[in-house]
Image 1 (cartoon, one colour):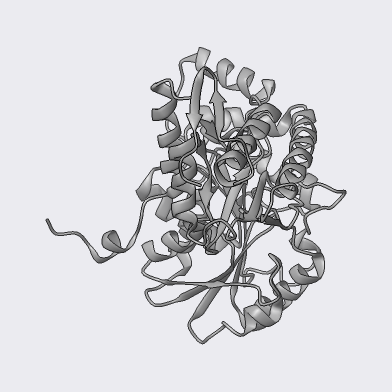
Image 2: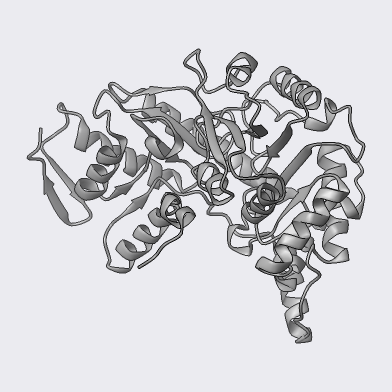
Length: 405
């Protein structure tokens, strides 16, 4: 069978594969705990549900404009004004089937084969694959100071004449790092000076802890003309716990948005009008669900951090945002894929191997589930890895006997 060069070089989404594995095991009745997930467990806002139900009852479910409905664009403009204090025009906005699609069409609109895209490591698993889908070259940059916070010197050392864009994701998936405003200011100034596209992936921007806030990129932008190379990506998946609704958006200069819309029009057409109605309901409705989710996550995070810090040999930089902790388990196994598979096989706990995020020896552990799941999941992991743990463990009525330490 003949497969294209791009097809041969692009791997599957490991995070989506993990969700599939969880669903299969759960359906078989396995007592599996998902500590690798990337979606909040809280319900979508009531305003989203009533809005989609009201439109469904009209039975008028038709094609949507390629770049989003007028009403959807108004909601995005409102969201941007409320959260970023910047008024943009409808022509600066595209609504897509998830923030992932908004990012994908942005990359397709700006990249040529052999262009390079820089992004700090650890990074979201899809960045390198999406860049490869454009025939371009992903350039991950690992902070040289051993933290999860990039420095401009690290970025600048990797910039070449082929550098077309830099992607910044803060709060960061998987580390939970919230990049300081000083860094965002530097990266904005650098990109404006060099004429490099700056893509801000802000999907977690309201989910922060410890009193920290994600930097507002518009506080540092000076070029608001049609020459602007800033692309802002966001959506309803994380903040509103609406992962399955698949509504995201991009904000950029008008010419670029037009090109992105042309590409999207030939890929999927406009995002579902029903799902746009739900997103509009969430954005225009009561906003208390965001703070409720953030508070729940902050409490969950406290529990997970305490549990991991009491875990012999595990090193952790405390996350200040998202709903992930990125912990160094290399004292137990430097091969994170092997370790993740081991934990799934032996104690039915799903984690994400750090290798997929560009840093070997780490595991991404999610705290968007329940406190019970976090505690039981860590208990199982500790039993499987700690030689000082008892030799037997009960999972429900099933007794496990450890024979590997």
